[in-house]
Length: 230
Ligand SMILES: [Zn+2]
Image 1 (cartoon, rainbow, N blue to C red):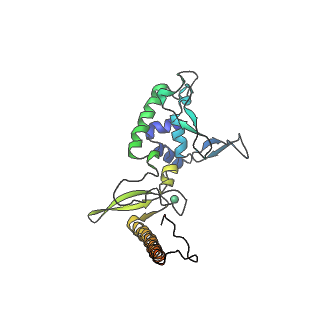
Image 2: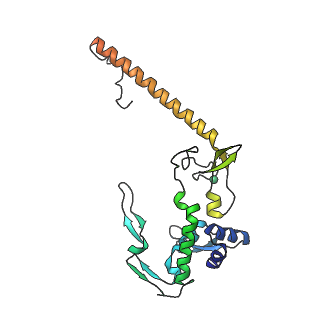
Image 3: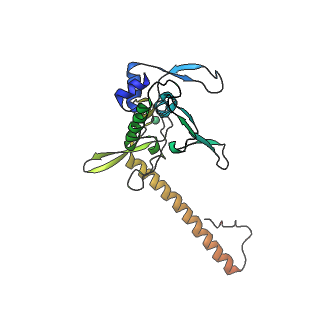
C-alpha cells in the first residue's frame, strides 16, 4: 500500500498525507526494551517512508554493506551510510519484492529530486548570509524540535519567519508555530551585545588593576587574578 501511494503521490510527504487523510495505520516492530519484537500499528511517519523506499530489500535484492561502523571520540560507535558503488554485495532478484528494481531506481530518482527543494539534509543547516541567522538554533517551545526559516514578502522586502516544520515533515500535518524572525534576531542580538559589553568592562577593569600593580611594583594578594582569556 505504501508503494502504491508513493507511486501516485510522487513524494514521501504526499504519501504520509494520504495515509493521514484516509486514517490508514502502518505497522512498526518494537526493537528494544519493553515489548521487544511486538508489532504495533500507528500513524505513518515521513522518516519511515524514506527508510522503506531507500531499502533495496523491498525490491527483492540482497544487499550487504549499506552501513559501516564508525567511531567518534567520546561517543559510542554508530552506523555510517555507504554509497551504493561501495556496497560489498548487491544481488538483484534474490527474493520476491514488493516492487521491481526499475521502480526502486525510479523511486531513488524521485526522492533525490524532491530533496533538492526540501529534505532531511537541509534540517538544522545554517544559512551563510542574510537575515534569519538563527535557523537550526531556535528550539520550538511546543514540540522541542529545531526550527527552520521561511521567507515571506512583507511590503517590498523579504521577512524571515522561524517555523517549526517537525509536524509538516514527519506527519504531513500543520506547523506547530511560526514566529516573526526580526523580533527574535533583535532580542538575541542585544543579548549578545550585552554579554560582550559585560566582558569588555571586566577586561578593562583587569587592565586597570594590572597597571596599578605594575606601578606599585607588586600585585595585591586580595585581588583575584585576571584570566587571560577575558
Ligand atoms: Zn514544534
